[in-house]
Length: 350
Ligand code: FAD
Image (cartoon, rainbow, N blue to C red; front, side, top):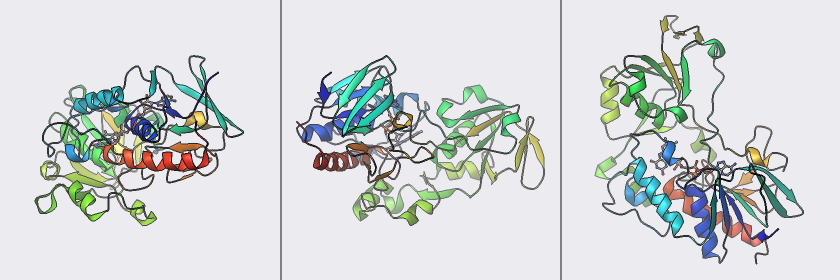
């Protein structure tokens, strides 16, 4: 069995940025991706999705998004961009191979895939995102709720919800965007523990990402205190205007679900048709179980994307991995370069 210098698991933006960082260090990696085509999870995001970051702050290293840098690209443009990006890399990219298990022994790795494949590598970068592991909180009464329950990972477009009473759990960007879109055809309430934390998308006439980069906030090492604050919802005024109409509205988190009803904190009960969980994702790293790389909850043990327990293992694409911009298009390249640099220091790559 040939031994690859580097195996990258996952071919979304994080995996592709890692392949480019490896190329720049003279390595030709093997990249395995479960999907049949490039683009990572972007083809599965909802139809109306437009980036929250303008084109000039939404590219991977070495290849700009064409056109006006101030525009906000749509989902399908990013899919095309990533597919094109993949074709310009010096990497052995293989689609349709899901890694189900990693064996880590004596500083070397073997990846086992769902089609019976086996691949040996001297180092591994896990870049498998979280979209295949949506977080579904335990809510009182949820197990017996008779209405429809879905996660935002399953949401595509408003038409199936026309005329419905919909409650969305969460107060982040996806919750707010989907609530605003659905309110054109449905009666929508956003239920959350904290109020929506609005952030002005264009302070002093400049996109907020310009300020993030200009002030150094974008790449500054994270401090724990930042993680404790609420998720900021980027808004150019359209979402706040929509909430000001009363549909959608935001209410304090309900106390329980029962049959097809939701019980609000003031004790009133109301029938609803659909509950949408906009409750985020967790890193999809099941294939690392048994290696000692994960804690009891399945979260990776790492510093800045470099495993603290398994030498030769790294991660790219974890939320807040190193900075505020980790797990975004503009941050993936920076984290990938850092991880490759550190893995290289501990490996003899040939
Ligand atoms: P993914 O895109 O999820 O790719 C992971 C890849 O790994 C997939 O191709 C999958 O097939 C593969 N994979 C998974 N498991 C395995 C396995 N076991 N074996 C082999 N392959 C596997 N970021 C921005 O910068 N700007 C935005 O405007 C923006 N909007 C977003 C909107 C939504 C709704 C969401 C959910 C995220 C958004 N993000 C945005 C955040 C981030 O950029 C995306 O989530 C991005 O898709 C993450 O890229 P990734 O490569 O880390 O993971």
